[in-house]
Image 1: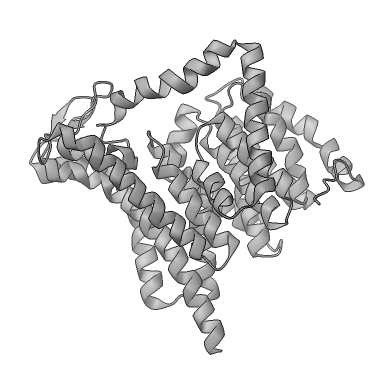
Image 2 (image 1 turned 30 degrees about the horizontal axis):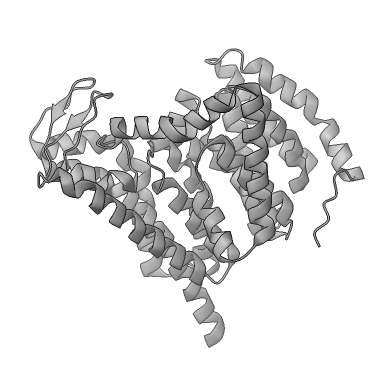
Length: 399
């Protein structure tokens, strides 16, 4: 039986300092382009973490941010700092300095997915924070809280369902039921505030109407696009970007190839997570899967790779950086870090086309498929997590 402590003395003390902090965040976010906003919240994140040394239950303050209909780059940076701290505090037993945290925030903000998130003001960093809180809660056997966080993620954006499916297969019913109840309650509230027909239309029609617009886009990295781009062509009626004819023009084969690829990728990834020796590895693999099995996967969705990449680095460090595994991991990380900024230019160069921003560019079919380097790197990251986990167990048995 799982008991949840709603309020403790330590929780009360920590929550008392949050209202003023969140009020400052909301006021600063009124001006979306303020450099001072980013710098102040960057400092505030470091200062608060360094001085308070709060445990996981201080995320109660962060959950109040969910009440905002829109949030700016400052709160995104704050959520990023919180996510990094929550991860490293587990792996380093709270031995993380403000300087190290500042360096990590700057490195991650310099990555293209996080820059896109800050520019367009999306929810992925916030949802990633909720997933990390779910991971920590389940890791501490707080299954009810963990299920609620998973339900929040799924209710806010129809993602992370492979994680819930994994817990169904594991028969972790408390997590599944709490996640399902959270989704149902939030959707019932939405139906009361809007109307039942709006909610029904969202689930039945919105997704089906949007998918055809983006399934051929070169910047949609989802597994759902593979068949369409191979057998129907690359291009989108919405974006002015690169276009390419199909490798083989067989439109009838596109959906079947897409669904087959999706099922194979999902089964392989779930198998890797199932065979993982630790829950941390399984959760890291499932976060990567949740990105690519979404029908639309934009570049800022890859902010969810924060946890898997830090986890892989931590495992390699604990193994004293084995040469082959470290080299392969480094190659994948460098590819993901720098390739996004030069992806279109490389494709145009290989196609013999001059790159011009903001116009449609006809490129070679094979060159256009180079955008799938990102999904391949995500799958490689999942495999490396599984492989390094088993490598560590093998070393322990030999020792």
